[in-house]
Image (cartoon, rainbow, N blue to C red; front, side, top):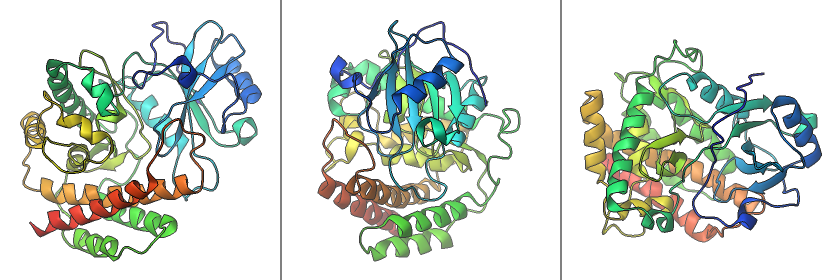
Length: 366
């Protein structure tokens, strides 16, 4: 058990403008045993019960809740989705370990309260962290509240933070045994092919075709760094003036190829004039946000790396997102994400997964 102590700064976690009713519910939401979790939190930090819990909308994988006590202390609780889970997915202990390891590094992460792996408390593993002051720019409406100058600064700060992560000494922070130090693409292809087979709702032969091409062309000279695995604008808590306050959602983090992180960021990046943007990447088409090429150029300049292989990694990122997206689609079909305040167009989401793998094939053909 790790214990990060309390946060005297009283920072808060926000996901953009939400009403109090959206953030806090007096009833216990699906996925939370109010009494048991309250007792556990009382043992790990200062709280004044009763606690109020609210599901933060928009999560596509693990469930994230706001937790507020009677003295307005605020926390965030993360747990896996409801129902049966795929093997090795939704590992709360892994997420917690990563943020704990990076707490003393220059990478901004939330301050932690503790990790619970006792199923008698809340059925599944969960961890609790302190709130962060900031916003998550997860949709275009939030993006529109920002000036063009702030949007530009956010781009630079996103790249700066990614470079900071990739410069972390793996052994110095105690993550040398997190995963193997080579064969990242091969490991990822094996993992996500397996996840696709276990969660798929239809046949999509392109998944196998792209997988085989990716495997044949896998880079053999990649360096090894900490790879966040899902680094993007909406997985960073941003200061309203632009800086990254905290990097969140470490579920997919491992030791791997840093260019895969860059390609993942670019994969969510939408540019003006592009048709049918997917999800939160529509936001980056607003004035002030840099282009994909400009973002990649900032990274290459800082890290002194060649972008010769970036198209391969972007194809890999698109294929991987299609596999991940199928799992999300299946969980929503099965009602495993709890009562969400937002509507997810499942038909559109399914089509988007197909387009992702088509984009991967196109990228490998150029």
